[in-house]
Amino acid sequence: MESLKNSETNTAAEVAASSAASAASHVKDEAKKNMDFIMKNLLAGGVAGMCSKTAVAPLDRIKILLQAHSIHYKHLGVFSGLKHIVKKESFIALYKGNGAQMVRIFPYAATQFTAFEVYKKSLAKIIGTNLPIKHADKFVAGAGAGVTAVTLTYPLDTIRARLAFQVTGEHRYNGIVHTAISIFQTEGGFRALYRGFVPTLMGMVPYAGFSFYCFEMLKFVCMKYAPGVTCDRLERNTGGLVLSVPAKLLCGGFAGAVAQSFSYPLDVTRRRMQLAMMNPETAKFGMGMFRTLAIIYKENGIMKGLYRGMSINYLRAIPMVAVSFSTYELMKQTLNLDTGMKV
Image (cartoon, rainbow, N blue to C red):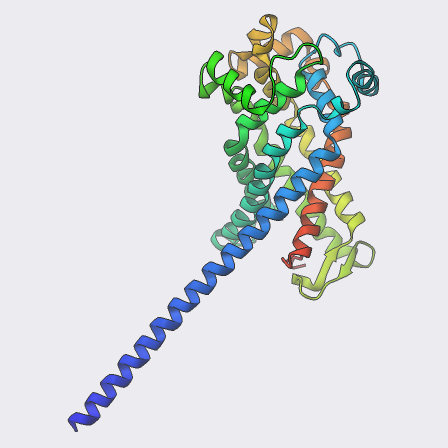
């Protein structure tokens, strides 16, 4: 009898040990799966950001020069400004500041896209998808992702803006590291690298929120109502569909246009604050977000001030966001990640 009891005890212990080992193995597998998911999304997002920003780098530079009223370019338009850059400086000057942009954009885009995926999953678990507004959780996840990314990488954006604003023959900075050290030492330490951060943060909520919301909503519409025209079959995806490349570009372009329309005045405010200390006469723009907004409105009004350069912003934002989302989705497909959705 005692031998039987010992045998049962040993069996129970073995079962418990086996269950514990199985649970530990499951947790380990889940952790590995999650890490693999995050690493693949970081890579896909980083590559997408680099491709999109390089595609519109010349338009980015002329936008900065026009936004901040460069004395050499403020009297010019978009295309005449681009021609003037090539004539006055060189063709390579169209990409001035793009090196700093690449250093910034890879971690920025990688963080933003990955944070969106993580926040989207978390929100789906917490609140589900039964919301009054379809895909509203995507807006919240996108806004949160944008805020996370910009908080981590903002100093690099300030540095890139300073480098892009320089005109050949009037250089104050000699590269990313020199720019960072100069701003830190002469303009108030680490805080100076975050000048213009508040309007950026406020602008990022509608920009990132509407970007992701519009793209996801349009993707849903395409997959549900026009799959024969806008989608290809891909069985491993949720729903068995994947957006075609033209559909990706169209959805991304429209999302970029909507997002920029809401957030542009705060983008102008951010640029004026970032570049305020480059000239004594523009130092007044570095005294706070609301004061900067008021000065821009008082001196230049709405269309020539708060929305100055908006035409070029549409020219750059639409292809930039289109390339960004398209490249991201293509990278996810290449890395065997799910790009479908329930329809």
